[in-house]
Amino acid sequence: MANEEHIKILRKGVEAWNKWRNKNPDIIPDLSGKVTHYWSLKEADFKGLKINLGSYPLTDKSSKLLPRNLTNINFSKANLARADLSQLKLIEANLSNSNLSGANLNDTDLTDANLTNADITGALINGAILIRANLSNADLSGAGIEYCEFTESILDGTKFARVEFNVDAIHLPKTDYSPSYKFIFKFHLSKANLSEADLTGYDLSEANLLAVNLRGANLINANLTHANLTKADLTEANLTRVQALSTNFTSASFTGSCLEDWNINSSTKLDGVICDHIYLRQGQQERRPSNGNFAPGEFTKLFQKSLETVDLIFRNGIDWDAFVYSFKKLEVENQGAQLDVQSIEKKGDGILVVRVAVAPNADKAKIHSEFIQSYEFAAKALEAQYQARLEDKDTLISKQEAQINRLFDIVEQQGSVQKALAENPRKVSNYNMQNPQFASGIVDANTVDADQIGDNIQNNNA
View 1: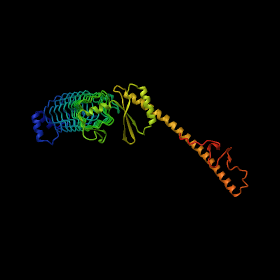
View 2: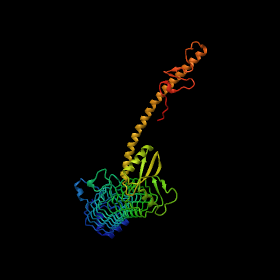
View 3: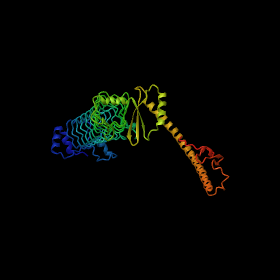
View 4: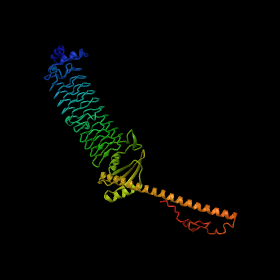
């Protein structure tokens, strides 16, 4: 039950309450069990307040006495630092300019609540319902966030610094939740502070991220399709494999960001981008430019030019016969694509990238798909031919070896005859040593014609 002394002091009004709190900062007020939905306690000091102690099990009938419903309560400018407000109904509550730092707001219903300019740093808001809540300029830096409902929330200027969102847990809405869902920011986040936030894999498509602070944020595999990042600060952000199709980056800052394998298209806006240098691989590798900084507008020109190319990636070397066949086939089937090999780059680990220039209006996805299919088909066909040639060559070599061995036998026989003649000329008088015959042919001892040994000996290098 509530502490009656605390209740008496509270009834004296805000001034008396705050005076008592200043004299007794270590005492934790206990107002458990009191119906408080009608309170208007503007600027009251509730630092360390215990409203829902949990001294009664939620299954206990006495739990009905707990002040769980604080609908429309006015906590404007109240000091609720480290207060336990978990599982309460703070629907339409006024918490503007309040201090909720370190507070426990787990599973609290803050539907339509006013949290403008509230200090929510380091608070726990796991499972909190913030549907249509106004969090404009509120500071949630370092807060613990899981299973939150942000549907139609106003997050204009909201700070999320150092917040590590749980990709598999945060979802919109709860009724559609499944472990595979990603947190979807389809609401107003303009000027929000998301510096150093971990947004790996998040769906930020169509989000209003005007002038948002994403400095040092982790956006690996995030979806920024159709999002508005005009004037966004992406300094040193990790944009590896980001989907940025039709994304508006007008006047955004990219200095020091990593753009490894990011995906943009001709509708991606890069006008007025501010950038000294970027990296093409994580870990600040493959700096561009390698020395110095981009000239004004050079970043935009570089990546707009890359929009008119198709990158063909080969991880096990290139079969150039297959490449030539596939490229020629591609040219014939896409005559308006204006294909041209622009460069060949080594990327390490045996990876080669052939960059092919295409017409601005060419269907890059179609060209890439057709080339890869044709190349793989040609490479397999040529591999079969190479194997057949190797087998034929082995057969031919065996045949040639047999013929050479027969030739050696003939030469050896001729040597034996000559030796016998030298030892006993009469025994070999019947032999015609000028043109002895072997293998149904005539063999000249000085100029042996291989064609006279019964078969041709050829050295084919096919």
